[in-house]
Amino acid sequence: MAQMERYTEVWQDCLDRLRLTITEEEFVKWFQPIRPIGFDGANLQLRVPNESFMVSIERRYLQHLKPIVSELYGAETQIHYAVPRRSQPAVDTSSSAVPHFTAPTDTANIKNPFVIPGLRRIMYDPQLNPNYTFDNHIEGECNRLARSAGMAVAVTPGNNAFNPLYIYGDSGLGKTHIVQAIGQEVRQRHPELQVLYVSMNKFQAQFQTAYKNGEITDFIHFYQMVDVLIIDDIQELTGKTGTQNAFFNIFNHLQLAGKQLILTSDKPPVELKDIEQRLLTRFKWGLSAYLSVPDYETKVKIIRAKAQRHGANIPEEVVAYLAENISANVREIEGALSSLIANASFLGRKITISLAKDILKVYVKLTQREITIDHIVKTVCDYYNIELDTFNSAKRTRDVAQARQVAMYLAKQHTKAPLTVIGSSIGGRNHATVLHSCKAVADMIDTDKQFKGQIDEIERIVLGKN
Image 1: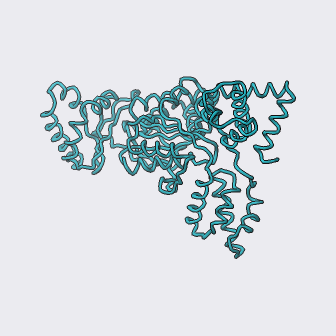
Image 2: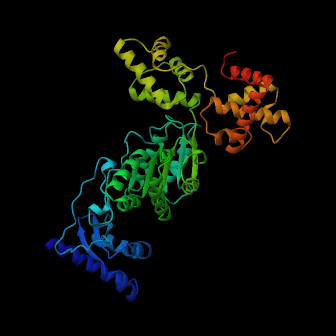
Image 3: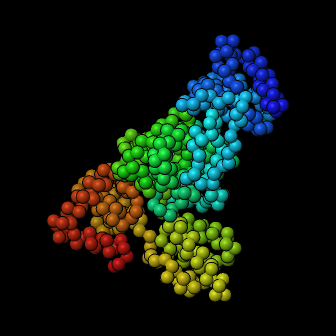
């Protein structure tokens, strides 16, 4: 009781000072109804009549309130708001204490705000892997845009041109590492912000549980409290109408409130299927950053960094062999390298190219050379005897236009690059042009034997079978 009287007295001092900075009408309307219900030395909990009070205080008067609270309660004090449930009367602070809660370790079991009557903000585990940071992330041409945008987001979350930040690329290229690194960086720079990482599959499982229990509103309200929301594998929303509606409400609220959204996918927004147009439109509002397969130099950096982390000394010729022969997937590089180091250690052998060949031939499929869009374009230009500058120019003669269509067709067949990336790499076209070109080439293959023979020959060259 003495403690309650103490922070009530301090709150009265706070009100007395506030009264000097705002009009009497404002004071009576917005601050007299507020009651202090808890203070643990770092967190001041205030009960407000409804959510509009909380919004008004935050928007209009926080600049007056925060300095006074810092002076009276301590510079590190954070303000939290308790909003009574609409279906229940306000909590009687004279007899009810704020319930105690513990931070869950699994977002599938995160309690929604209604479980803690009146308490607006709760603290929870952000679900971030401490091993995924920018310090141990290898930068290269393949990921530079996404990494740079991620750092910018971490510096000013919600207050930048990259909201949402949409990172897409094939599996195993490091999307999760980058978005989790953003989350770690935000927590270091802005410890007062609530960060949450969750996969779309887990989000969907939570939604289903909330639907079954009749708690959809509370489920949405919980996610609307997050300051930086990271959703992995957003493509899993495909075909899930109910989850899409819930996510739309969450997305809109966070966007309007100046909160940060970070999404990952295996496809760009324009290639996602069975997702409502209103969501796809919002996915395009910020920045879409593509993660491509690592080039040779980046693979070398990755191998060296991973070897150093394992404390292994790998000769440069072995590093070069691995970079040339492991298909360009970061996850596969890590697995193959771990297998090589483990076998060398257990068998008591030196790490040599011979050992690398023995290990890799059963661990990964060796590839002659990574097939890239640039490789395909060069092969097509050589075959049709077209200069690369002419191929990339605005020239639209029949032979050049057909060569571009062939390159787009082969790029779609033999790379995992999204259609938007293929189009931008070949003449700066959009995904619709790529689809049209692929259909045109496929139709000619079916009707023109001579043309089909040309495509077969170009494919053999591309695949290194000649």
